[in-house]
Length: 587
Image: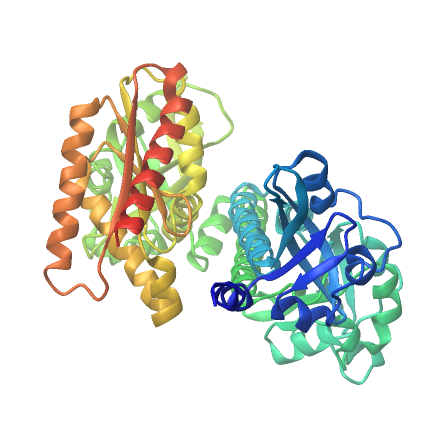
């Protein structure tokens, strides 16, 4: 009866189980193994499982017989024609004398967990590529330089085998203007059109451009639109592709194309990030064009002050003319309109201009003018906040030069332009925020945490305390109620941490359900008080109307000096997992 009971338990195990004697002959298989390989009792394990005449290299069963210990290894196998990753664990069976007479081997399929880990790493790398793309957009000075950088970043950080940018020509063909990646030879014979009247226009790129939306091809060699390009793709190990239209001044002008070496590379989250990247490229195209137009306009207008006035009145820039001795500042109608005023609403005096400048910016403006008015620089530039008619502060970039000097060599007249750059400043601020903050919670992200950790190694704000935090039960919520509910739980936990720590403490989300807090100048007592606040805040939320119970496992440690910081991070993480496991075991 006891033997039947044991057999029933082993048969019910979700993993495959076999028992082999010292000759590597199979003497038992549970139903899981039998379903995969058939009943192989009495046969050699390496012959039926690996179709090999000899024992496999690194076989954990062989190692058991050699040293009498348990061993684990991973293998890539093909089961029913499908590649799988399995974890093999073997443990010895001893007789009464302590001799190894058999080995029990457990085979666990870890394919899905490995694929999930690879997908997470791929998403993280592509998110880093988005951040670097945003930085490239801010710093770019030319369209070609921007395109080259984006292709390189996409391949080096996004995990693609090839990235390219193509632009539409007058004959509806697309020419590659930038590319990067080991599969670049694929582009050598590529002939693509946006017009479906050409054979080369009936593929993914032409379709994406005509329809004005991305075309995702997750199985390149079976997609009906890729027939013309399959041979070249196979030669360059291309298995999937994604095409994203690029816009300029509202019209589609080209495409961002990325290729990967495996099927089903582009899931929904990666597509969303690539959509963001293509939108940022389109913004950069518009911005570069605006800057090119501005530079060309300034160059053309230098030849004539009258021409400058006429053209600026019809553009987005305002014109100002300051006659210093007369204490008169003539502002063009466009300059006044830029701030929401009519020309007759503003008195044309230096005092009026000073009144419009933000009080915090005026000392900088005053010092700047003092320096520029005594210099002989050909031109100057300064950005300040100015008050518009609605009471809002707008960023205005002033460019100008001294055009007249009096007989004593002092500046007598200054002319220049004013450009409203508020939208650009806000966009740059948004990009900077996105580079350092987590999108879901608004907390600092992993990149900022790593940078802050490096900074703390040379800081004098010691002691420094570390708190590691992890949300309990997030996977259960995701599996039972969906990722939208899981996201709400993550944001709720983030609010608990944000409310519980001091304003000078740095709270960051460094993983799906993982958070970390750096408390500069804080010893153990300060940390204990902060943890009590976390628990109190958590309890208060759970006693009100929380959709799912918020439970956060915490671990802390304190570093008295920079040399102890690394150990404090490790210790806080270890303590957090200890308490998390303890709570889980208790439940």
